[in-house]
Length: 502
Image (spheres, rainbow, N blue to C red):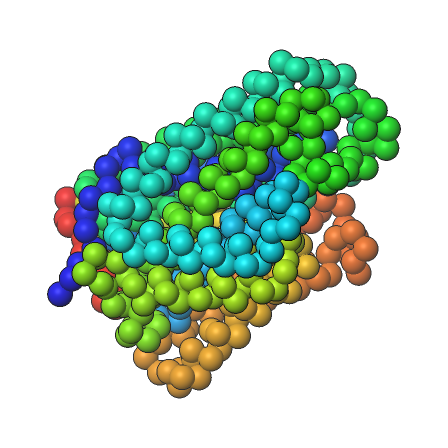
């Protein structure tokens, strides 16, 4: 039987995290977050970074413990059984499978400003097919592409930032208001911050192909996320300083930089930096492309793992001679092609993907504490300190993040998760699927959806932000305790995980 090949070094894993994190987000997020939060967008990035780091710390222990590709598909199954595993794994795959399409969508949006004759849908489809072909060649080929492209992706954003600061350091812009007080938090989702910073999980999804996953997966998560957050903070500062003060007469919320296609290109053209705009157009092809390739591979591996755990049909578990889950990859490409026919823009697609991904990550803190009780004797290469405090806090942060995605995103994401979950139960006839251990999932998702629909600006209950967070915190901690009590007595034998004792 053909197996996945363990060829990824620590460097390649770090590069995979960085390339998954610095994709289309750096081309659009600084502009969108500036509109929403103005100079306070710097605090939005710090807040998003803190949330991402805490969740990453949780998954650093889980990733070192469950060192298989597509591991995110197994976490909920391992601790709470098959129904819970389907919900968590399906949410993860749902977020992943849309990401390659979003990245190529960003590419053609940027290129469209310079190549108006370009048919965006056709170009995006061709790029998606090309990236699928590269993925089929195997993990070693994919790693070579990602390693080389990621170096470029680090140099260009930092170079652009330095050029913008040097040519237009309008420090007075940092004192301009004209944005909503809730904009700092809205930017986490609508501005693309969490969408950009959740790339750390790529190391976990490629763990089955890492040479030394127990050591390298936690390191890659932490190092890759730290590098990416630094780049985004520098870039956001540069963007804030480079906007001409005359464009801020109506405040940051009135800023418009769409005339030249991409916002960074518009700034460069306004400053007379034609060479910089050319560099940005070139990078618009390279950065999202590398990210699309990385996420295409991880989406296929999540799909493959769901099939191996018998949560999806068996054909998705097929691996070709190059050690690639080819059927799962083909399904990922096909769904991406279908999504591209919808004609959505980058900003509209981000909220849906962010909500699905954060939902899939929310189970991490629950599963970590559950595994501490289910398998205390298992060797843990990395052990999260103060887990009894940090895991509930991480779950609360994840709940806040899902809520901040807003009703417009959740009204699409929640049915996309819940309806297939109910179909799964009908197919299985609710037998031998550990339904009792997964009931908290349904109440959790329905509760967040109800809160998003009823609470907030222009909603039935326009509560103050502080009261919103208090209510969400109480709800999250209640669900966390219920979920922990609902765990299986022992780790599920249906998960593809073999533990080693201390």
